[in-house]
Length: 351
Image (cartoon, helix red, strand yellow):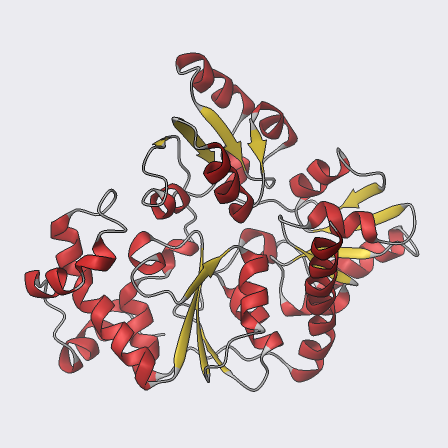
């Protein structure tokens, strides 16, 4: 990918991207969804990009899939579908457009390509990685299989295509416990997030053994910090992601995936809530929960924040940054992902 200076020069030759009060006004319906978290001056900066991207994606027959951790101007401004990893994986099986632009991190784009081998999948920044995906390899999966012969391998979707291909089934934070419980045998191998595995083990009838990976965002939160925050503000409801440590989860009023967190907040509508997860979550859902005051602290994912409007526009304009997965690996990885989707949907219907 060219440096930002080169990207800006190219885009400025093709698009008028100067801050525009007129375009801010023309996109006021979108701005109404983010006016609690983006100032009018900043929206005037974002609006030309939002207009250009939304126009260009129609020309390219493209769809934009965005994770819940994207910034508000992406989440509300240009995304066609938003959600957690499971929701985006399911949506990737349903899109009809020729081009998928993945606003998230690299493993998500790989998952979309695995599920759509004939489509073009674009990644606005190939350097948008994931500490979990980088912590485990296919060789690591083989090592765990040798250590626990016969135990099924459940790998988090936050993994590379090679790891998915080496696993029996995938899971997300939304369905990890259900997937583990559905496996045959008494012992289940989980990779690569040790904290998700420990939190699942605390609720599972299975013996869960795990790889020693972790998320650089969620491992920063501590139980001591949460206790101190609750002491200073007893009214606050603490909502944690299961990639946090078991000690943090024990302090929370609710623990769930990003979609689970959104659902809980809608059902309970607390006066104050602290989301123990990535920063952009609260900003993205503040419009739909106007009665909830979102409290800090907040940890930001440096990988997710590599995805910007500027990079999305460049990628769509040039049709570059295409994600390619080896067909043989993709075929095996697809089995793990589709097993997860099929099992999740089957369990949901029987619930």
